[in-house]
Amino acid sequence: MKIDEFLDQIGSEFYTGVPDSQLRALCDYLMATYGEDPKRHIIAANEGNAAAIAAGYHLATGKVPVVYMQNSGEGNIINPVASLLNEEVYGIPCIFIVGWRGEPGVHDEPQHIFQGKVTLKLLEDLDIAYFVVGKETTEDQVSAKMADYRALLSAGKQVAFVIRKGALEFDGKITYKNSHPMTREEAIRRIVEFTGDDPIVSTTGKASRELFEIREARGEGHGRDFLTVGSMGHASSIALGIAVQRPEKRVWVLDGDGAALMHLGAMAMIGAHGPENLVHIVLNNAAHESVGGMPTAAGKIDLPKIAQACGYGRVYGAATGEELQGALAAASAQRTLTFLEVQCAIGARPDLGRPTTTPQENKRAFMKKISQGAKAVAKVVDQKA
Image 1 (cartoon, one colour):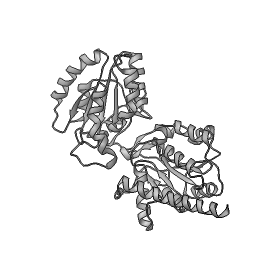
Image 2 (cartoon, helix red, strand yellow):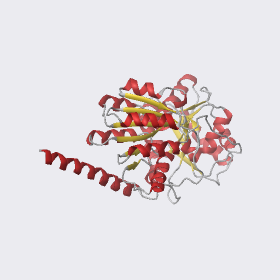
Image 3 (cartoon, helix red, strand yellow):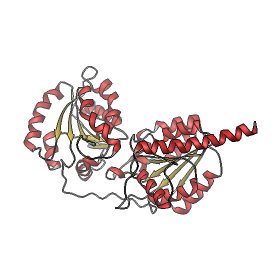
Image 4 (cartoon, one colour):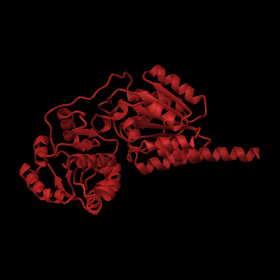
């Protein structure tokens, strides 16, 4: 179905959400039609943030908003849906458009498999009526469903359209780019040269895919790297948990700008505890590149100043290979909680692959590597005693 036909039937004047590759047609249409006009379209930091923005829109206008998201974002909307939107609380109507990654019977990446199985069940548990949209769905069917939904929305309920792969189409083409000269893969390659045997926690999306392939090209194993293929926004918190338990190891986290923004409070927790062995690197291309390229707010804010305000001991920025080399050398030469923002271009190799190991295999290899390091340190301590 053409995206404009689909949205004509929904009839909303306001959209907010987090981009999803399954909803690429919707995301590109919104950017082509509204851009980032906050009265019509706001790209949120996370899905719960979007639900709250939608609530504010309804309170201000009395109209029904639309929240779009990947099904992985259902976890983030549980709190605002259950304790804000629900009819037993404020009764704020909202239409959710949910990209169905990991739909049973449809091949997808491992991080989407369980989420795909519980997608519809979670909506049922949240008392959100849903309608699944596939390639065969017609405009008349969406129109008929909206007729049913209007009564629910008038009663302060929430409803959802769950979008199967390839169900929506957009004839236009949106190109996302910036002016930064260094690619993310080049930045990661330079970082790997400095980290040596240190553990790395990498964020979801293309950063982890590039790190995996860099290790392959170098003929190295993958035990040093924990690839956070799902749970967007939590890589830095995982790294914090590792760093405080393994103070003898310098722990590096490769974060993305969209991921860092999704759970920005993690930086406050990291700064408050101040592990001197943690280096937090944000690869900032100001875009949700792994799901299409829509912009993030990271192009309009100062992440290094936020890190400094959160209590990071050293803060650096880099936009070129030479600047990155200097910042990495400085970070490696000291033991203090460090933040580094690396400005990167939007884009990746067209032949970029995906990890060939499973998440379970990655976990076991990483834990084995960490354990070996801990045993070596313990042996040295015993000998000194």
